[in-house]
Amino acid sequence: MHKSLPSHIDWHTLPEQLPPLLLPLTPALPALRERQAAVLLLWCENGGAPFTLLTQRSTELPLHPGQISLPGGRVEASDASLEETALREAHEEVGLPAAAVHLLGRLPTASVSSGFTITPVVGYCSGRPTLQPSEREVARLIELPLTLALDCSRYGHDSLERNGETRQFRFLQFEGHFIWGATARILLSLAERVAPLFQSASSR
Image 1 (cartoon, rainbow, N blue to C red):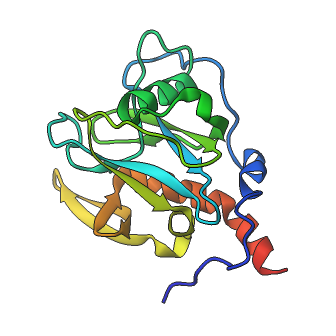
Image 2: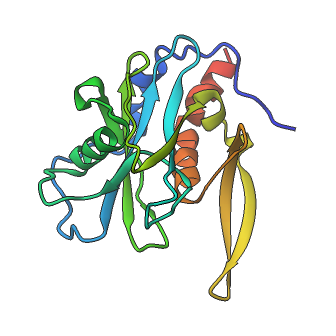
Image 3: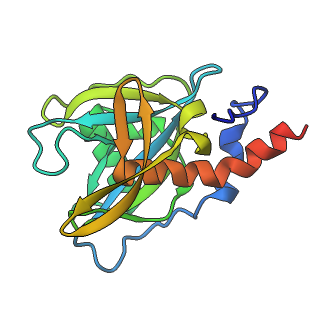
């Protein structure tokens, strides 16, 4: 049985409490840019029901087709930072204006089977953004409630066999969508970092 988050959380003030719990923003790219990528974990204010934005990748994409992911992609030569990569890719994929995002910090990097190292960048958007998803890259937009994404108890455990090895992974389910791999790890990383805020709220 899941232990749900406290019902009296003030979701409006939580974003301003996040920066001390996150890794700092970094204005420069890593020395080795090859196989570096960044994704945007966006905290969207929506009255009392905030959400983060996920995409279902097009089945025509060469990497991770059809999977659920955070907006993002590989570093380009024109990017000045990983934050710029995350914002540029989010604009290209879902039409999110960079000016609508207030950057809060980073989460630890995540590695994926394709060999990329992903840096998650956390941002805040006041209100529901107007989006125009790319038909080439995005099959569907998914608004994942933060009441679910930030509840550590909702993440399941499973395993799979790959190249003769058994690999453990975490997953999250929402309205028939199976969220796993790096996306689930990144979301869970944020959930674990904000858990002290929920514990404080439940003790009041």
